[in-house]
Amino acid sequence: MTGAADWRALGTSVRLVTTDPALLDSCNLLLARHLAEVDATCSRFRPDSELAALDGTDGRPVKVSPLLAEALAVALRAAEATDGAVDPTVGSAMNALGYDRDFQLIQEDGRPVRLTVRPVPGWRLVTLDRTTGTVTVPAGVRLDLGATAKAWAADRAATMLAEAAGCGVLVSLGGDTAVAGRPPHGGWRIRVQDATGPVDEIPARGSSDMVSIRGGGLATSGTTARRWRRGAQELHHIIDPYTGLPAQTPWRTVSVAAATCADANAASTAALVKGAGAERWLTRLALPARLVANDGTVLTTPGWPTSGRGTPTSHLSARPAFEDEAVRPTRGSGGGAPRYGTGRGGGGETPSTATTTEAAA
Image 1 (cartoon, rainbow, N blue to C red):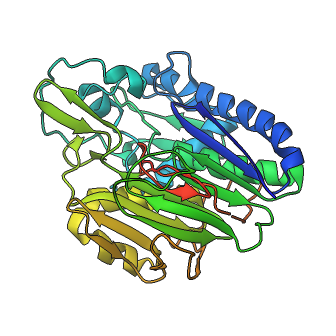
Image 2 (image 1 turned 180 degrees about the vertical axis):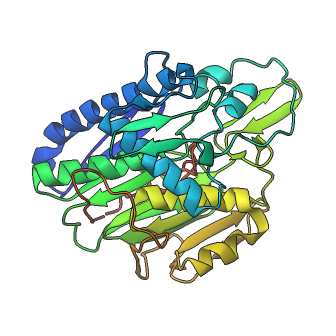
């Protein structure tokens, strides 16, 4: 028996599953508190957030909270590990494309924008000193943690709740799914799909796979869910740091399993930006992945089950995505996972389903 709750926070869907239904409500309260703290710390859309306050520091080192320092460390690590394909200095580029407020609001604004090819400032300009708890952001550089913060928050929440409740926990934020504690029998079964939809329904369109994980995280990044029009231009939220524009990619979704949701999401988002070479890159990292081309063709890397919509043939391995040690949640890490889902892709919302899921981007 498991218990599940669904709601919204951080501008996306939230799904919490516990292997002990009696602990669901108390875990949900802790999760809501945690996500409120993450929002107040990391939101690009709140003028009173700690992240927004960095816009006015003009290159001076400033003290930041341990929570923001951890979020920044995850973002900078993702940038380094992906050779800059996932870069937190895309804030100004996002604003220039009209993504300067909650996604539901930007869809109502159809004013045209001028698209200019301009590389983003680059993550190497940002200095984080974990010893002193200070960060230095050059004048004019705006940070956006959208490509990493939700996955990191899911990792952190799953670990915290599993330790507090002593049961298995799955947390999915817009399809970025993290599990911790003892998993249910057979692992956490997750439907990975190409179209965002209710977690309890097999999508009427697009393909899907059923997989199972016992630990770590699973993330799907995509270009189809968070799209908007400005004038004659159709845009999406996966930014190519080398152009400052929406990535031109042959993939509509990429799903990756790794030892942490943050690593899985960094890899899936980077794969979209890397484009045609993504399958080889993920294979070199030995990451189980599912890549869906714009024409619907599905490619998988070694380790990804090919069971289609039926019962998973094997569990996805929760291995580190990158060679260096992952940035772990401050309260430790856990592993566990059933079929309760999300589906997203790399910063937006696309499909992946853990016992019910949606996908993000």
